[in-house]
Amino acid sequence: MSHNFAEATSVRRSSATSESDGMRYEATVFEGWDILGNTNGGYLMVMAARAMADAAGRPPLTITAHYLSPGAVGAHFVDVNEVRSGRRFATMTAAVINVGTGREVIRVLGTFGHHDLDGMERFDRTPPAIPPYNDCEIDVDGDDPNAQPVPELQRRLSVRLSPDSVGFRSGKPRGVAEIRGWFDFADGQTIDQYGLILASDSFPPAVFNSGVPVSWVPTVELTVHLRGLPVPGPLAVAFRTRYISGGILEEDGELWDSSGRLVAQSRQLALTPRQT
Image 1 (spheres, rainbow, N blue to C red):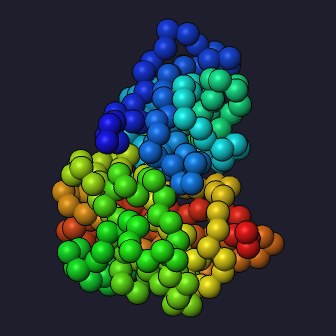
Image 2: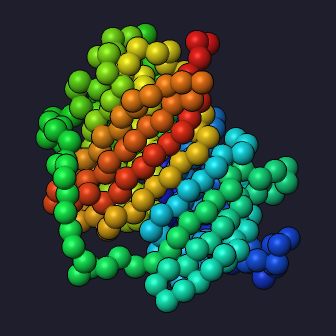
């Protein structure tokens, strides 16, 4: 399996400027980071975040992407513009553009800066209740011929779903729109802030466990708040959907490191899956 996560999301500063006189970066979308042929939205966001962080000279704190067209394998530009740069924060925008088609794939807005490590810390919630990492099965195709197929993306990850979160794969959802489990890279790569962004969009949609059709759930918008760097080890994660209306659903995510600290939060708006 070629191209680990860091390599597959790397960007290179171009000598050319963008059409808006900003900074242009070159990137390549590689095979194997897709869901049924569509490049994972978190993966695309990571490419944008790397370019924006390089231009800002600071790591991401919060980043929001709006999805405009499906991602495809091949060469892309990431065009970055600075909105404002201050003493602590820099705000940047970026557009990820398919070189072959000229189509913009995602438009991104983010704030970059450093956490106040001496600031107050208070959590009103605790990590989700999940069986131990080794007691949860890796989310890959099993022996059940009637089970839902697992996306190619999952073969590069070690996503382990809680036993009460896997029923939708065999047509037996638990009736609650929630997914809980563990996230890690299959090759043992350390999870950094960019890994947190990917993890925020790497689990099956929580709505699948509510009993709605298991079908494509296209992302409209995804926001990730980076709360801190995780300590080494897998992440405990939980995703929940509470509201579906007008053909749109929301999904809220929490990502906790192995020390019990909240390291990222996410909120996604997506289209409600339809019966295929």
